[in-house]
Length: 149
Image 1: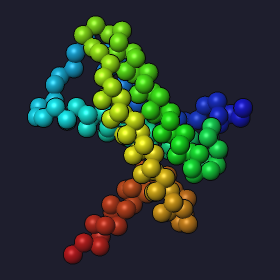
Image 2: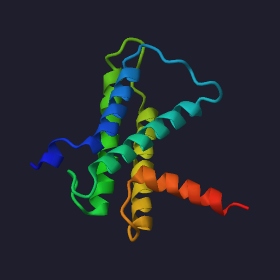
Image 3: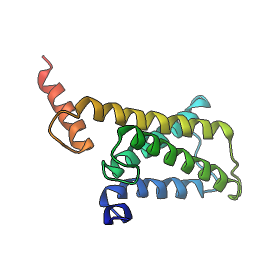
Image 4: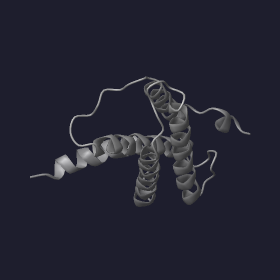
């Protein structure tokens, strides 16, 4: 393995996000989201979309999944979805918590959405100057505001 595959600072945000998920999942109870029950599923979807995007970004072209965009997308999606499975299994051992198959479905769909959004972003901007994902997002917002009347 190369040094980049062993540790890269680009992987740190995904690792920190996993720790946050684990810590929150270890709590016996979490505050309920006000409103309809599907907001919980939306929170799961968003959490795992972010995780998948962080994994995608953290791996880069020379990461664990290789240089192909399709492998990088599938790898980020699969890694985030598997973390969702481990999170639901972890909740079986936390007093007051339970595994929910619908949460797992929301986790997997969020992971898929996050990886696909990143892949589409890379494909859209692949011919341009190489920048980080976050820099490209900020630049897009700034450009959009400058074009507004």
